[in-house]
Amino acid sequence: MKIKKIEHIGIAVKDLKKTIEFYESVLGLKCYKIEEVKDQKVKTAFLKVGETKIELLETTDNDGPIGKFIEKKGEGLHHIAYSVEGLNSSLNEISNQQIKLIDEKPKQGADNLDIAFIHPKSANGVLIELCEERK
Ligand code: ZN
Image (cartoon, rainbow, N blue to C red):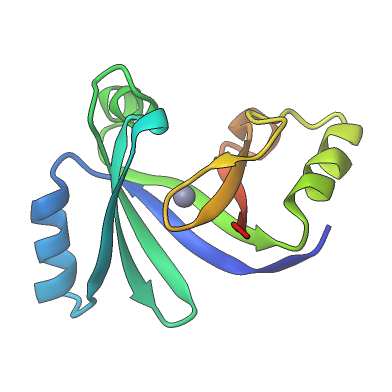
């Protein structure tokens, strides 16, 4: 598997609008996109930090993955996303090593990415997202 860079860091938040305000006025970053991913029951906002991005995630449904995460752990760091060369082959490589994947196959993520998650139980408690730009 070949990882190119940290694509983004995902942060679970309760109030997307207020959080964007914080990132823009306090940190001086600029939100360039707000996008809802219906499938994931989440509204996302993206801010660029050099080569990397911050992805803010607000749930649109308390039963969605971000809703459940916030209920259990509160707001905070949710996942780290690495961009890989060849998402499908990377996933095959990983499952061949008996590592637990949440997604055996890529699914559609926000900001024009195909994504798949590695289970945090197989990754020292960190939710790892692998992603590749959708062609
Ligand atoms: Zn992400």
